[in-house]
Length: 198
Length: 198
Image (cartoon, rainbow over all chains, first blue to last red; front, side):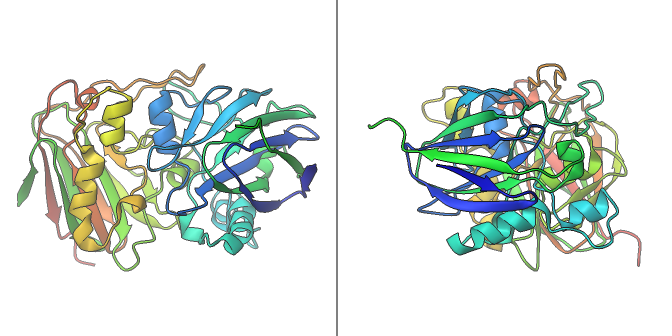
């Protein structure tokens, strides 16, 4: 069954080991921040720094594992119809909108949405690390190290599919930042499949 | 007074608000992983994702602030004689040496050294995020997103100087990974100065 995350909101759910999570961009050009915690010990959490270090590559796609802070594989990317995602930047937050956009009454952003969606699972805001930002397009100038946030390359119906490599608590958003999604707020969809019997 | 961190080891210490920390590469071509925690609430910690997001740049230098996970400035870079540091990769660890180097009896690395040095301050290993890696040289191919770890550009006596913008607990290493420091293990030095009177 396909679930829909409304624009500028988030969802939290359990994803058992072996299950597959498909994150779908139903209208195209939208970003979804993904967090993963070990369901049995929330102190183990998805780690951008570990994952990038082992991949020696900023842009991850089919076949790449996403590691935890304890260097265990949490998720594997099984299929990816886009091929461009971000794993550098933290979820947009009240502070993002204040500092980058100059908003005086800032939205709580993906950070606030993730914090709210994960609170029932025992995740506190300070435990939220850099997310794996599905479909987020952050090209980098290798010479200077400067980067920009550009509209996603995803088209309507594009998706990325993961397999859980341990029992997980997942946080997932339909991104709240105009810069990330080409200037309009759109929903995100996801589907959980049991995966092949072991 | 200049303190010396022996090769492949680490140090932990308090750095009060307003004080200045100078990290020195005494022999050249060595890396030092730097961590910062809010001394009054260790859940507030240096954040690569927040800092890079606000800087829109991977390579930080003089004038750049280092943000916490709560989007507060923890440290400001006051002076930098090298201009190339890394803020992408986690401290090298037992797992780094196992996964990247294939070591069968791996060293505990900067991660283990930081965990040991920070344990007296109440920092647990799972609380260690991506460090600011002084002098670490990670050039990136913007087209593919691939990167390599190259010898540091620092020469003997080069340094980077920070100001604490809040009361901090600092972790600092002389890096343990051959790849990071051009193939030999060397010490790191540091100095704490009171900073100008407020």
